[in-house]
Each structure stands twice: as structure tokens, then as C-alpha cells.
Length: 135
Image 1 (cartoon, one colour):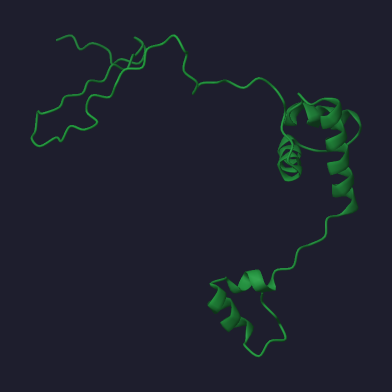
Image 2: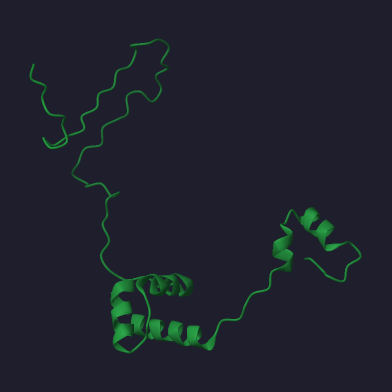
């Protein structure tokens, strides 16, 4: 969209397209061959061990002699779009046998104070409570 040889200056072209000028001047750096080899090896390990996360892949790579950290492995995994396959918690799915209670205040217009009440039933353990004051 932006042409360096156009009659309009680059600044004006960026203004018309609502882009920052830095995006017009940005040039991607090519990836090094070492990074590409590392990405290829992580992909191969992921195919062999699809359940392996960043920590396990880091350990496997370190056994092969690579000096790499967990965060770098995770960055590469995100970049190439792989994720460990394991059973994840299903916290948002309700149990079919549990009853769903209706929300009774949905169409109620609250017009005055003390019209609607709420209660907090948060459970706290004895260690979270403040100590009794003896007086």
C-alpha cells in the first residue's frame, strides 16, 4: 500500500492510512540458521512426544547438548503454533444432573434503596480470620 517512489511523501501516506511511520520503515530480520534448526528440532520432538511441554522439551534438548531455557522453548512453541496435548480442566462445563436456577432479578427495575439484598457466602478458614479480641 505504501510506495516509496510515490509522489506523496511517506509521512503523508502513513497519515492517510492511519499507520505509524515506524511500520512503513520496518524491515523483518531473516531468522538465523541456528534458530531454524532449533525450531525444526523442537517440532520433531513434539511429533515424537506430543504430551511434552516446554519444560520436558527443554530437558530433552539439554540432553542433546543445546543450551536453552524453558522460556525460549515456550517462545519457539508459540511461534510455530504447537502446544502440549494433555487433558485440560473443564471448569466451565456444568454437570447435566445439576439444576440451573433462574436469575430472578433479570427484569426487575431497582428503584429504591433496600429494594434488593445480596449476601456473601465466601468460606474462610480459621487461619484467614482475624484473631479474637479479648477484652
